[in-house]
Length: 280
Image 1 (cartoon, rainbow, N blue to C red):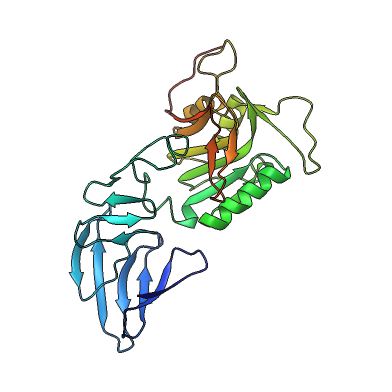
Image 2 (image 1 turned 90 degrees about the vertical axis):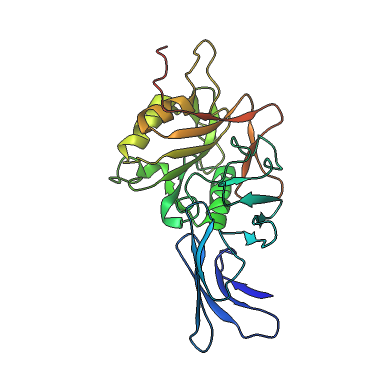
C-alpha cells in the first residue's frame, strides 16, 4: 500500500494498492476520507458517523478513518499509533500510554472530532514573549495548523478569539497569577495578570468555546490560603469552558512530541468546570 499525505502529515491526498493505480482521496476539514476517485473517474465512498463508526459504503474504500487512524476489518477497531480506538463506543480501548500527566481523560477521544483537528477551530493564545514560550507555540502550530494570537491582540483587536471552539494558552505562571518574560529573557518585576483578569480578557475577546487547555506552570494550583483561586478556575467561570491545567508542579515539553506539554513528576493535569470560584 502506497499513500501520499499533505504537508501536515495527516491529510491523505492519494492512495495506491499493490499493482493498482493511485486514487485521489477527498477528505472533510478534519482530514477524514469520504470519497475516492480513480483515473477512470470511478468513485468509492464511505459515510462515517460522528464517533467514526462506518455507515453506508460504496465501492472499495481506504482503511484510513479519523486523522492518524487505520481501520481493522477483523476487530472493527481502528489502530492509532500506540493504542486502539473503538468507533462504536467513541473511546480508546486502553488508557493513554503517556499516563494521566498527558491527558486528564484516560480513554476518551477528542470532545469534538472536527474542532480538535480543523485548523479553523483551534487557536493558541501566546501570553509571554520569551524563546521557550514562542518556540513551543510555533511547534504546536506546526503540528496542528493552529493560529497563534499574541496577548497584545486581546484588547486592540475586537473579537480576537470569536468563533474559536478550543483555546490553548501558553505562558508562565505561579499559583493564581500569570508571569511575563520579554523577548530578551527578562522577567517582569511583579506578577502580570491574575486569573480573574485573564478570564475576563478572554471573555471580552469573544471566546465562547467549550474547552481551554493551559500550558502554564501551576495554572491549576490554588494560591496559599485561597482554595479555588487558581488561574484555571477563574478562566473556566467567565468563559463557560472546561479548562484543563496543571496542579501541583511545573510543566515541561514532551521529550519526543513537539508541541505537546505534560506535567512534571509531582504534578497532574486536572479539568476545571465553569463554576463560580469562591471569594478570597
